[in-house]
Length: 346
Image 1 (cartoon, rainbow, N blue to C red):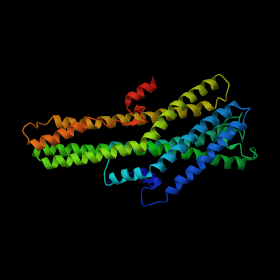
Image 2: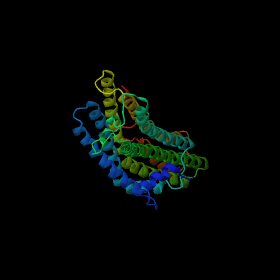
Image 3: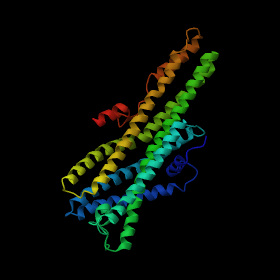
Image 4: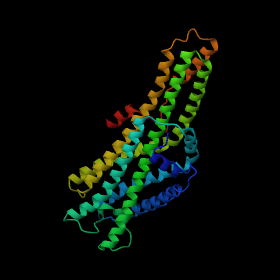
């Protein structure tokens, strides 16, 4: 089964495939994100008289920090991603997972365009705003340019748009690849369950031992997956929680009139995106924990009292392994599941 186009592109960005062209895009993202980080910090220092610009620049700086770290993690774990790529070759994923990946890809495309189009729309339709108003992309106005020039304003806006698209590309990378590799796990486990069922039906010990070998490879794949995604997901979960709190505070300040009220829509949209990201990780983290239950069900639903002694030993080995759930623990701090989402919501 062919891979989804989005996943193909992201695998090329990691450098774990034969095509290295997209890998240079990752290096470009790293360099330009580092520039945005410095520019956002300079903006906070430069605009001492405008609380609105400083607060918005602070949000931008936090976003750039997360993007920079995510790119660093991706480059650091390139070999681990290559291992997962080799394991998942020629493997399919459930159709529901393919649909979700396509939906998330479209969501990030639409969301990034909204964040890019909104400042232009606001400037055009709001009489109180003129060309060069810095609140929409403050960390670019530290550049030594005359902001009342329409051409320069358009160029600065283009640079702002690049930063928005890079942010959503990185979010889409984490979200879609995480769902994809969970789908690979689910597909492989369904195959193992089918093999175990056939082994019991045919009383075939060799087929059952083959299922044990495949399950051992799956556990190795899962451990590699945790190494690759634990740091980015921990960073993303922590950042989304902090970002949601900050944007909520900014909305309150905007309502009370302390900062520009136009920032409310940006904060609300960003907070909604943070909630969506947390939901994705917790939901599919719970999916991982539920996957092993299928093997336990097929083991206990079949009578194995009359099989050979060596067959019973193999069954006990499998039972011992599958009683340990596939818990996706990040940073030795918390386990990604729906219970975590309820705690965050509280």
